[in-house]
Amino acid sequence: MTVHDWQSLPLDIDSGEAIARTGLDYRLVDTSGADTFGDWLQAGNRGFHAPDSGEEQLGAARDALAYRRTTGVYDATGPNPTWPVATTGSWVSDLTLPGGGGIPMWAISNVTVAPTHRRRGIARALLEGELRTAAAAGVPIAGLTVTEATIYGRFGFGAATSVTNWVIETERARWVGPTPEGRIDFIDRERAAAELPALHERVRRSNPGETSAWTGLWRRISGTMAGQQDASKIRAVRYADASGRTRGVALYRLSGDPTDFTKHELTLIYLLTETADAYAALWRFVLEHDLVDIVRASMRSIDEPVRWMIADQRAATVTVRDHHWLRVLDVPRTLMARRYAGAGECVIRVTDALGLADGTWMLRVDDNGEAKVEASTEPATVTLGVAALGSILLGGVRANTMYAAGRIHGEASAIAVLDRQFGALETPWLGFTY
Ligand SMILES: CC(C)(COP(=O)(O)OP(=O)(O)OC[C@H]1O[C@@H](n2cnc3c(N)ncnc32)[C@H](O)[C@@H]1OP(=O)(O)O)[C@@H](O)C(=O)NCCC(=O)NCCS
Image (cartoon, rainbow, N blue to C red; front, side, top):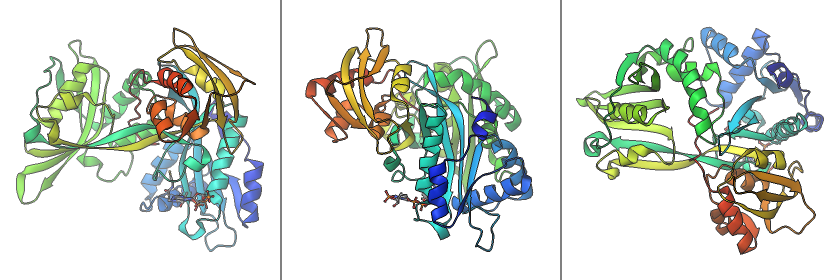
């Protein structure tokens, strides 16, 4: 599907009617119209408790996000009818599955409903409309990253990857990891923005849960969006191997303690590496930075090797939280696109209140970890909601755990098969929000 295909998909009729019943108007927003799209972006800022954008920031945001299918809900009776009271943006990205394959994913972002119009069912209409539109367009799965963990389960999304947030006391940590031979150099922010897309394209297939990114993301992370606040504080370094090839990039910012110059905090904004050497070298650089006593890093993997590269693991306080939520729309296509950790067969019944993924399937995994999935009339040995299917899809949580949590039901022997099949091949991780 090309950009133009998804941008011009018609609005969902049922959602349009549900919104019309509340006296409001559901519209596709023309992202080439500077004023209309500008008002939509400002409404999005307001929805996420962010300040209004200045003209320069607005122009940069328009350029960065114009490719998305952009919808708004408008209230003609309000004093500001050109500002939407609800917003959503969506596009098709490429989701990495276990084994390194990818499937098209309907990525959903910018979901906001103005506080003046909350809890009237607007978000429900928007979300259900997104899912029906994606399914009708043949996109097998939808995804989003969330502000709150309480919103999207009801629409069939399950938390599929978690991330860790780190606070490390540098003096106590002490580096005991490898000391690679390549070199680290500062690069300017523009160069970081230019290097990151290709590096990410090379790396993202190794992490189930990663998705293709967009230019505006790299500009924001590296501080090169026009008008970006505090961008001048962002520092960029790259690790190059012996041949001079960039193998990793780290972006960070420092903030000082006005009473003690030795107590700076280093916030690692983003770290992306494609080799173990780059990973070790850039973490060491960060942890051994002079005049820094605390390093903070967020949205890291749940299985960071750096834990094993410091002498005192207790120097790091690590918290875990849900991050990437997935919503299966087409069960056979999604399940056949991943590789599995164990062979076996089971008949799974998937329940879905929206009816999009509802059904019973025979899942057969061969010794190569490849699956065949066919509709089945046999009695199911495992029953699970579509949200639970999204959660186990990447191996981010074990089927056994979801069974113990009452999210999956079935015969013990079938749960054991499912647990073996869906076990993680690689640690699922998504390193950014969208
Ligand atoms: C979250 C938000 C989009 C909800 O919009 P809304 O129009 O008020 O939601 P709806 O009225 O359609 O509610 C749909 C359902 O979700 C529930 N719900 C809505 N917001 C919720 C929240 N923050 N936490 C838990 N449940 C929530 C409602 O109770 C309702 O439940 P039910 O239909 O199952 O009984 C809106 O409050 C908002 O814009 N918040 C700030 C921005 C934000 O966090 N956006 C999410 C980005 S990931």
